[in-house]
Image (cartoon, rainbow, N blue to C red; front, side, top):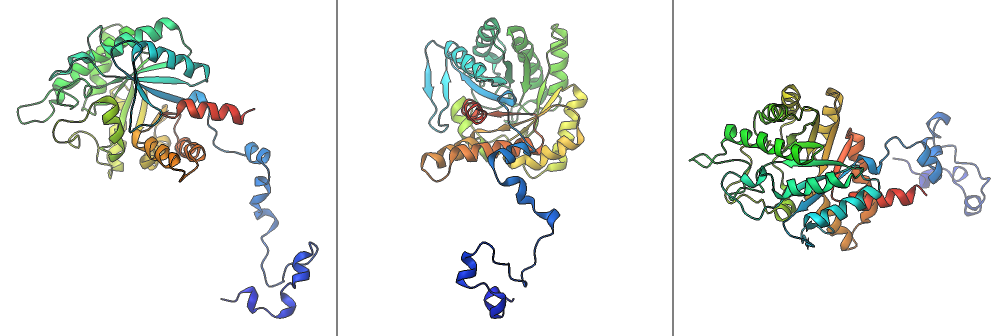
Length: 358
């Protein structure tokens, strides 16, 4: 390949010519056509902001809250920097702060005082999530309050439903309990219920259970494409929900299966889901984009604990610019088609976006 160093002397600028802004470009270098100069709109921050195709807004962010019994409790989670388990009163304080920042919503995960084989703490009227929901409802905050509807935090074995004698989850028994749990959450004040157990038929059972209890207007956000991902690691500590044996690959999706993910989403919509969720987010951007092209419903994505932890840990060590990396990651999720994003960085991102808008 011929380089500029190989060109005849008359085609190469001298040192004097290089310093001269009026010096001509060597004729041997092809110039881009005038219409292909895409750098024109990248010159200044104002130009870049004007032509930006994908924009983040605090209102599209949902913050997870891990709620434990007690009062005045705030327990840092070692594997999730900046995230804590909190008691209901502290959850209310966090929710107020998030609302003040313009964050769109919160999603509640409960850690009960006691667990059993069927996860009964998930549906009882005075359960930890139900108690927190009532506090948030009575506060009248400008937030969408979502209840995660699952059983793994409440079972003593850490799986998402009662077990059969051979150790498998009893799918049909689980969906009955999930329906009961969703109705209890809606009664306590949940704006949205979000089944995440990946049990077949769970959305249909929950829709029927909500309607029978008079909660016809409570929407269902279905964790429709939830893969058995290695990115959930820190969540297991946060929610105290690690399986006591085995894993969840028998009911959560194989991350390799994109067509199956589309079937899961189509099934959940047919059963009555109002919104869909893809989880985890960054490893599933292709699924998110396919879903956006195919389904005309609100679609969210969950930037899960492992995604958050790797960014936070690298930023703590000075290896990356954590703020830029987090904003880039969330922008890519929105660009792929997410209407909203569940993220542990919701408060930080909302503050950053507010600073940038000034």
